[in-house]
Image (cartoon, rainbow, N blue to C red):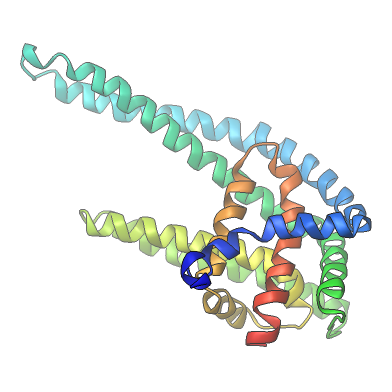
Length: 268
């Protein structure tokens, strides 16, 4: 019954940032491990929001105007009694701007995660180790040497890019198929985004065990729909401008809690 009430784990996945807050409350020393990551996120965020976001907003503005101008050109030949459609066009313009704006915020937050997690990896690693030690009373680390460690980190990022591009191109072409293609591409795009989010925030705990990329992806899917709930709340947290400078470390810590509770003893 509890499984049904929690959406078969979906709501449980959403709860992990709040579980981390309880852990911080009982172990306040853990807060010291998020100071440097927050500072790193602030520096990276300044460059992203000033550069990428402002540039992206200009592109969004041009795209919106292009769409509205095409609609206006189609309405020229409409009869006079349909002049009320102009109000619909104005409403549509605002809807398009809001949707594209939200999409731009999500993309900017997503990129902030990618750069922030890489640059602050040592501190996130320490935070993850401490959380795992508290949660499981032990910690497993497979040493491979610094050179191989760096190489694995590079390969991890490259494989994520291949995953995004591979499915992104597929979903792009599917989006041209009326109705069915649009639905599949939208759901598929959200699925890949959620998978990448989970990979990023689970990786501190999983990489200590030197798990290969395919198995990491498989573990994300094995914990569905809890992993979907976790990705949803994290996507919301990283999509809020400026707030995400602070929430990303919480997502990393929450990911370690998720791995400890739902992966270590069940799938590894």
